[in-house]
Image (cartoon, rainbow, N blue to C red; front, side, top):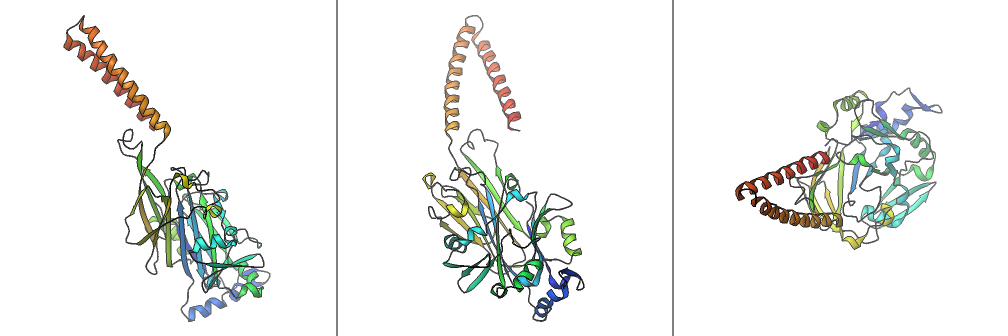
Length: 383
Protein backbone atom coordinates (compact mmCIF):
# COMPACT_ATOMS: atom_id res chain seq x y z
CA UNK A 1 0.00 0.00 0.00
CA UNK A 2 1.13 3.57 -0.67
CA UNK A 3 1.66 6.01 2.16
CA UNK A 4 -0.29 9.08 3.18
CA UNK A 5 1.78 12.14 3.95
CA UNK A 6 1.79 15.21 6.17
CA UNK A 7 4.29 18.03 5.69
CA UNK A 8 4.48 21.77 6.20
CA UNK A 9 6.17 24.96 5.06
CA UNK A 10 7.53 26.97 7.97
CA UNK A 11 7.11 30.74 7.98
CA UNK A 12 10.85 31.30 7.87
CA UNK A 13 11.24 29.18 4.70
CA UNK A 14 9.61 31.70 2.33
CA UNK A 15 10.74 34.88 0.66
CA UNK A 16 10.85 37.56 3.36
CA UNK A 17 10.04 40.32 0.84
CA UNK A 18 6.93 38.59 -0.55
CA UNK A 19 3.58 40.04 0.41
CA UNK A 20 0.68 37.96 1.68
CA UNK A 21 -1.85 40.63 0.83
CA UNK A 22 -3.03 43.99 2.15
CA UNK A 23 0.60 45.11 2.38
CA UNK A 24 1.56 42.49 4.99
CA UNK A 25 5.02 41.02 4.34
CA UNK A 26 6.14 37.49 5.00
CA UNK A 27 8.92 38.88 7.18
CA UNK A 28 6.30 40.17 9.58
CA UNK A 29 4.69 36.74 9.81
CA UNK A 30 8.08 35.06 10.31
CA UNK A 31 8.91 37.01 13.46
CA UNK A 32 7.34 34.29 15.59
CA UNK A 33 9.27 31.66 13.66
CA UNK A 34 12.64 33.44 14.14
CA UNK A 35 12.05 33.56 17.87
CA UNK A 36 11.10 29.89 17.86
CA UNK A 37 14.29 28.98 15.97
CA UNK A 38 16.35 30.65 18.68
CA UNK A 39 14.55 28.47 21.22
CA UNK A 40 14.83 25.44 18.92
CA UNK A 41 11.05 25.08 18.72
CA UNK A 42 9.03 23.47 15.98
CA UNK A 43 5.34 22.78 15.49
CA UNK A 44 4.24 19.50 17.05
CA UNK A 45 1.64 17.12 15.66
CA UNK A 46 -0.72 14.53 17.07
CA UNK A 47 -2.59 12.29 14.65
CA UNK A 48 -5.96 10.57 15.21
CA UNK A 49 -7.13 8.00 12.63
CA UNK A 50 -10.46 6.14 12.71
CA UNK A 51 -11.30 3.50 10.11
CA UNK A 52 -14.91 2.32 9.88
CA UNK A 53 -15.42 -0.87 7.86
CA UNK A 54 -18.74 -2.30 8.99
CA UNK A 55 -20.52 -2.45 5.65
CA UNK A 56 -20.10 -6.20 5.13
CA UNK A 57 -21.81 -7.08 8.37
CA UNK A 58 -24.74 -4.70 7.77
CA UNK A 59 -24.28 -2.91 11.08
CA UNK A 60 -24.53 0.33 9.15
CA UNK A 61 -26.61 0.97 6.06
CA UNK A 62 -24.89 3.98 4.52
CA UNK A 63 -23.24 4.76 1.23
CA UNK A 64 -20.51 6.61 3.17
CA UNK A 65 -19.21 3.41 4.79
CA UNK A 66 -16.37 2.42 4.75
CA UNK A 67 -14.74 5.72 5.67
CA UNK A 68 -11.51 7.07 7.11
CA UNK A 69 -11.53 9.88 9.69
CA UNK A 70 -8.41 12.05 9.96
CA UNK A 71 -7.76 14.24 13.02
CA UNK A 72 -4.68 16.51 13.15
CA UNK A 73 -3.73 18.43 16.30
CA UNK A 74 -1.03 21.07 15.78
CA UNK A 75 0.75 22.74 18.69
CA UNK A 76 2.47 26.07 17.82
CA UNK A 77 0.61 26.19 14.53
CA UNK A 78 1.61 29.85 14.04
CA UNK A 79 5.04 28.62 12.96
CA UNK A 80 3.44 27.12 9.84
CA UNK A 81 2.77 28.99 6.62
CA UNK A 82 1.17 26.05 4.75
CA UNK A 83 0.20 22.53 5.75
CA UNK A 84 -0.24 19.70 3.23
CA UNK A 85 -2.05 16.42 3.82
CA UNK A 86 -1.25 14.01 0.99
CA UNK A 87 -3.66 11.28 -0.05
CA UNK A 88 -1.96 8.64 -2.26
CA UNK A 89 -5.01 8.18 -4.51
CA UNK A 90 -7.47 10.34 -6.38
CA UNK A 91 -10.32 11.88 -4.42
CA UNK A 92 -12.58 14.85 -5.05
CA UNK A 93 -14.09 17.39 -2.70
CA UNK A 94 -17.27 15.28 -2.76
CA UNK A 95 -15.29 12.49 -1.04
CA UNK A 96 -14.22 14.78 1.82
CA UNK A 97 -16.47 15.84 4.67
CA UNK A 98 -15.58 18.44 7.27
CA UNK A 99 -16.13 17.11 10.80
CA UNK A 100 -15.64 20.46 12.55
CA UNK A 101 -19.40 20.83 12.93
CA UNK A 102 -19.57 17.47 14.72
CA UNK A 103 -17.20 18.82 17.36
CA UNK A 104 -19.54 21.62 18.36
CA UNK A 105 -21.47 19.18 20.58
CA UNK A 106 -20.11 17.98 23.90
CA UNK A 107 -21.04 14.33 23.32
CA UNK A 108 -19.07 14.09 20.09
CA UNK A 109 -16.05 15.86 21.57
CA UNK A 110 -16.12 13.48 24.56
CA UNK A 111 -16.06 10.34 22.41
CA UNK A 112 -13.42 11.71 20.03
CA UNK A 113 -10.95 12.55 22.80
CA UNK A 114 -12.19 9.81 25.16
CA UNK A 115 -12.49 12.24 28.08
CA UNK A 116 -14.87 14.83 29.47
CA UNK A 117 -14.59 18.00 27.35
CA UNK A 118 -16.02 21.50 27.53
CA UNK A 119 -17.21 23.42 24.45
CA UNK A 120 -16.98 27.16 23.87
CA UNK A 121 -17.84 29.27 20.84
CA UNK A 122 -15.89 32.39 19.92
CA UNK A 123 -16.57 34.41 16.77
CA UNK A 124 -17.80 31.53 14.56
CA UNK A 125 -15.09 29.20 15.89
CA UNK A 126 -15.33 26.32 18.36
CA UNK A 127 -12.99 25.86 21.31
CA UNK A 128 -12.69 22.38 22.82
CA UNK A 129 -11.22 22.12 26.31
CA UNK A 130 -9.51 18.76 26.75
CA UNK A 131 -8.30 18.72 30.33
CA UNK A 132 -6.06 21.76 30.71
CA UNK A 133 -5.53 22.07 26.96
CA UNK A 134 -7.67 24.27 24.72
CA UNK A 135 -8.00 23.43 21.03
CA UNK A 136 -9.14 25.88 18.37
CA UNK A 137 -11.15 23.81 15.86
CA UNK A 138 -10.15 24.67 12.30
CA UNK A 139 -13.11 24.18 9.91
CA UNK A 140 -12.54 23.46 6.22
CA UNK A 141 -15.39 25.80 5.34
CA UNK A 142 -13.79 29.04 6.52
CA UNK A 143 -15.17 32.56 6.66
CA UNK A 144 -11.77 33.48 5.23
CA UNK A 145 -11.19 32.78 1.55
CA UNK A 146 -8.37 30.69 0.05
CA UNK A 147 -7.46 28.90 3.27
CA UNK A 148 -8.30 25.32 2.24
CA UNK A 149 -8.15 23.63 -1.16
CA UNK A 150 -8.13 20.14 -2.71
CA UNK A 151 -5.62 19.77 -5.54
CA UNK A 152 -4.67 16.69 -7.61
CA UNK A 153 -0.92 16.30 -8.06
CA UNK A 154 0.41 17.03 -11.53
CA UNK A 155 1.96 13.59 -11.75
CA UNK A 156 0.82 10.26 -10.40
CA UNK A 157 -2.55 9.58 -8.83
CA UNK A 158 -2.37 11.43 -5.50
CA UNK A 159 -4.36 14.34 -4.09
CA UNK A 160 -3.20 17.17 -1.81
CA UNK A 161 -5.33 18.87 0.82
CA UNK A 162 -3.65 22.23 1.41
CA UNK A 163 -4.22 24.49 4.41
CA UNK A 164 -2.80 27.98 3.91
CA UNK A 165 -2.48 29.37 7.39
CA UNK A 166 -1.13 32.82 6.54
CA UNK A 167 -4.56 34.36 5.88
CA UNK A 168 -6.04 32.52 8.85
CA UNK A 169 -3.29 33.89 11.10
CA UNK A 170 -3.94 37.44 9.91
CA UNK A 171 -7.56 37.04 10.91
CA UNK A 172 -6.69 35.46 14.25
CA UNK A 173 -4.12 38.13 15.08
CA UNK A 174 -6.83 40.78 14.67
CA UNK A 175 -9.09 38.98 17.13
CA UNK A 176 -8.10 39.19 20.80
CA UNK A 177 -10.26 36.20 21.73
CA UNK A 178 -8.65 33.88 19.17
CA UNK A 179 -5.10 35.21 19.18
CA UNK A 180 -4.23 33.57 22.51
CA UNK A 181 -4.82 30.04 21.16
CA UNK A 182 -1.69 28.34 19.88
CA UNK A 183 -3.09 24.83 19.23
CA UNK A 184 -5.56 24.03 16.47
CA UNK A 185 -7.39 20.86 15.53
CA UNK A 186 -8.46 19.75 12.04
CA UNK A 187 -10.77 16.79 11.51
CA UNK A 188 -12.26 15.49 8.26
CA UNK A 189 -13.57 12.28 6.72
CA UNK A 190 -12.60 10.52 3.49
CA UNK A 191 -15.03 8.08 1.90
CA UNK A 192 -15.65 6.54 -1.49
CA UNK A 193 -14.66 3.50 -3.51
CA UNK A 194 -11.06 4.71 -3.68
CA UNK A 195 -10.42 3.44 -0.15
CA UNK A 196 -10.62 -0.13 -1.45
CA UNK A 197 -7.20 -1.39 -2.55
CA UNK A 198 -5.60 1.80 -1.17
CA UNK A 199 -6.06 1.30 2.57
CA UNK A 200 -7.61 -2.18 2.63
CA UNK A 201 -8.16 -5.22 0.44
CA UNK A 202 -10.04 -8.49 0.78
CA UNK A 203 -8.10 -11.72 0.34
CA UNK A 204 -9.96 -14.62 -1.31
CA UNK A 205 -8.39 -18.12 -1.25
CA UNK A 206 -8.82 -20.65 -4.03
CA UNK A 207 -11.54 -22.51 -2.13
CA UNK A 208 -13.78 -19.41 -2.09
CA UNK A 209 -16.74 -21.31 -3.52
CA UNK A 210 -16.76 -23.63 -0.51
CA UNK A 211 -15.24 -22.28 2.72
CA UNK A 212 -14.92 -18.57 1.85
CA UNK A 213 -18.54 -18.16 0.88
CA UNK A 214 -19.05 -17.75 4.63
CA UNK A 215 -15.64 -16.36 5.67
CA UNK A 216 -12.81 -14.18 4.41
CA UNK A 217 -9.80 -12.08 5.32
CA UNK A 218 -9.45 -8.32 5.12
CA UNK A 219 -6.05 -6.62 5.31
CA UNK A 220 -5.99 -3.00 6.51
CA UNK A 221 -2.71 -1.19 5.88
CA UNK A 222 -2.39 2.43 6.99
CA UNK A 223 0.87 4.32 6.51
CA UNK A 224 1.78 7.97 6.84
CA UNK A 225 5.14 9.65 6.09
CA UNK A 226 6.70 6.33 5.08
CA UNK A 227 9.09 7.85 2.51
CA UNK A 228 9.74 4.66 0.56
CA UNK A 229 5.99 4.35 -0.07
CA UNK A 230 5.62 7.93 -1.35
CA UNK A 231 6.37 8.62 -5.01
CA UNK A 232 9.86 9.95 -5.64
CA UNK A 233 8.53 12.98 -7.54
CA UNK A 234 6.39 13.95 -4.56
CA UNK A 235 9.38 13.65 -2.22
CA UNK A 236 11.50 15.72 -4.61
CA UNK A 237 8.85 18.45 -4.67
CA UNK A 238 8.91 18.63 -0.86
CA UNK A 239 12.69 19.22 -0.93
CA UNK A 240 12.52 21.83 -3.70
CA UNK A 241 9.79 23.76 -1.88
CA UNK A 242 11.78 23.73 1.40
CA UNK A 243 9.00 21.85 3.13
CA UNK A 244 9.46 19.51 6.07
CA UNK A 245 7.81 16.22 6.99
CA UNK A 246 5.75 16.43 10.15
CA UNK A 247 6.94 14.54 13.20
CA UNK A 248 4.35 13.01 15.51
CA UNK A 249 4.27 13.20 19.29
CA UNK A 250 1.45 10.68 19.38
CA UNK A 251 -0.48 8.66 16.82
CA UNK A 252 -3.79 6.97 17.61
CA UNK A 253 -5.15 4.48 15.07
CA UNK A 254 -8.60 2.96 15.67
CA UNK A 255 -10.35 0.28 13.63
CA UNK A 256 -14.02 -0.47 14.27
CA UNK A 257 -15.07 -4.08 13.65
CA UNK A 258 -17.86 -6.45 14.78
CA UNK A 259 -17.05 -8.38 17.95
CA UNK A 260 -17.46 -11.68 16.05
CA UNK A 261 -14.44 -10.87 13.86
CA UNK A 262 -10.91 -11.95 14.73
CA UNK A 263 -8.54 -8.94 14.59
CA UNK A 264 -4.75 -9.03 14.87
CA UNK A 265 -1.83 -6.78 13.89
CA UNK A 266 1.77 -7.30 12.80
CA UNK A 267 3.38 -4.23 14.34
CA UNK A 268 5.12 -3.62 17.64
CA UNK A 269 2.50 -1.15 18.81
CA UNK A 270 0.60 -0.89 22.05
CA UNK A 271 -2.94 -2.14 21.47
CA UNK A 272 -6.13 -1.91 23.49
CA UNK A 273 -9.76 -2.72 22.77
CA UNK A 274 -13.09 -1.44 24.02
CA UNK A 275 -16.74 -1.86 23.11
CA UNK A 276 -18.60 0.99 21.41
CA UNK A 277 -21.61 2.18 23.38
CA UNK A 278 -24.97 1.73 21.67
CA UNK A 279 -26.37 4.98 20.26
CA UNK A 280 -23.40 7.07 21.36
CA UNK A 281 -21.69 7.27 17.95
CA UNK A 282 -24.74 7.64 15.70
CA UNK A 283 -24.68 11.44 15.47
CA UNK A 284 -20.93 11.59 14.90
CA UNK A 285 -21.00 8.90 12.24
CA UNK A 286 -24.11 10.30 10.56
CA UNK A 287 -25.73 6.84 10.43
CA UNK A 288 -27.37 4.52 12.92
CA UNK A 289 -25.31 1.55 14.06
CA UNK A 290 -27.58 -1.48 14.33
CA UNK A 291 -26.48 -3.26 17.50
CA UNK A 292 -29.13 -5.91 16.87
CA UNK A 293 -26.60 -7.35 14.41
CA UNK A 294 -24.03 -7.71 17.20
CA UNK A 295 -21.62 -5.65 19.29
CA UNK A 296 -18.92 -3.37 17.83
CA UNK A 297 -15.37 -3.24 19.15
CA UNK A 298 -12.88 -0.42 18.70
CA UNK A 299 -9.31 -1.71 18.34
CA UNK A 300 -6.83 0.99 19.30
CA UNK A 301 -3.12 1.15 18.42
CA UNK A 302 -0.92 4.02 19.55
CA UNK A 303 2.72 5.02 19.46
CA UNK A 304 4.84 4.97 22.60
CA UNK A 305 6.75 8.18 21.85
CA UNK A 306 7.71 10.68 19.17
CA UNK A 307 8.03 9.28 15.67
CA UNK A 308 8.74 10.55 12.17
CA UNK A 309 6.30 8.11 10.55
CA UNK A 310 3.64 5.57 11.37
CA UNK A 311 2.41 2.31 9.89
CA UNK A 312 0.02 -0.37 11.09
CA UNK A 313 -0.94 -3.57 9.29
CA UNK A 314 -4.13 -5.20 10.57
CA UNK A 315 -5.58 -8.60 9.65
CA UNK A 316 -9.32 -9.18 10.05
CA UNK A 317 -10.75 -12.70 9.75
CA UNK A 318 -14.50 -12.41 9.34
CA UNK A 319 -17.48 -14.70 9.00
CA UNK A 320 -20.79 -13.77 7.47
CA UNK A 321 -23.95 -15.55 6.46
CA UNK A 322 -26.24 -14.45 3.64
CA UNK A 323 -29.67 -15.88 2.96
CA UNK A 324 -28.96 -15.94 -0.76
CA UNK A 325 -25.80 -18.03 -0.23
CA UNK A 326 -27.63 -20.50 2.02
CA UNK A 327 -30.42 -20.88 -0.56
CA UNK A 328 -27.87 -21.37 -3.33
CA UNK A 329 -26.09 -24.13 -1.43
CA UNK A 330 -29.41 -25.82 -0.60
CA UNK A 331 -30.31 -25.65 -4.27
CA UNK A 332 -26.95 -27.18 -5.22
CA UNK A 333 -27.55 -30.08 -2.79
CA UNK A 334 -30.90 -30.80 -4.45
CA UNK A 335 -29.36 -30.53 -7.92
CA UNK A 336 -26.53 -32.88 -6.97
CA UNK A 337 -29.09 -35.38 -5.69
CA UNK A 338 -30.99 -35.18 -8.98
CA UNK A 339 -27.76 -35.59 -10.96
CA UNK A 340 -26.75 -38.61 -8.87
CA UNK A 341 -30.13 -40.23 -9.45
CA UNK A 342 -29.90 -39.45 -13.16
CA UNK A 343 -26.42 -41.02 -13.35
CA UNK A 344 -27.64 -44.25 -11.76
CA UNK A 345 -30.66 -44.34 -14.09
CA UNK A 346 -28.47 -43.57 -17.10
CA UNK A 347 -26.05 -46.36 -16.26
CA UNK A 348 -28.96 -48.81 -15.89
CA UNK A 349 -30.39 -47.84 -19.27
CA UNK A 350 -27.03 -47.99 -21.07
CA UNK A 351 -26.13 -51.23 -19.34
CA UNK A 352 -29.06 -52.89 -21.05
CA UNK A 353 -27.45 -52.09 -24.41
CA UNK A 354 -23.75 -51.82 -23.56
CA UNK A 355 -21.34 -53.52 -21.17
CA UNK A 356 -21.72 -52.13 -17.63
CA UNK A 357 -18.12 -50.82 -17.41
CA UNK A 358 -18.43 -48.96 -20.75
CA UNK A 359 -21.74 -47.43 -19.71
CA UNK A 360 -20.25 -46.19 -16.41
CA UNK A 361 -17.23 -44.71 -18.21
CA UNK A 362 -19.40 -42.77 -20.69
CA UNK A 363 -21.54 -41.34 -17.92
CA UNK A 364 -18.46 -40.27 -15.94
CA UNK A 365 -16.95 -38.57 -19.01
CA UNK A 366 -20.14 -36.58 -19.64
CA UNK A 367 -20.41 -35.49 -15.99
CA UNK A 368 -16.68 -34.62 -15.85
CA UNK A 369 -16.87 -32.46 -18.96
CA UNK A 370 -19.92 -30.70 -17.51
CA UNK A 371 -18.10 -29.91 -14.25
CA UNK A 372 -15.03 -28.57 -16.10
CA UNK A 373 -17.15 -26.33 -18.33
CA UNK A 374 -19.05 -25.02 -15.31
CA UNK A 375 -15.74 -24.23 -13.56
CA UNK A 376 -14.37 -22.38 -16.60
CA UNK A 377 -17.56 -20.34 -16.88
CA UNK A 378 -17.48 -19.38 -13.20
CA UNK A 379 -13.83 -18.34 -13.40
CA UNK A 380 -14.47 -16.05 -16.36
CA UNK A 381 -17.50 -14.57 -14.61
CA UNK A 382 -15.53 -13.85 -11.41
CA UNK A 383 -13.02 -11.82 -13.43
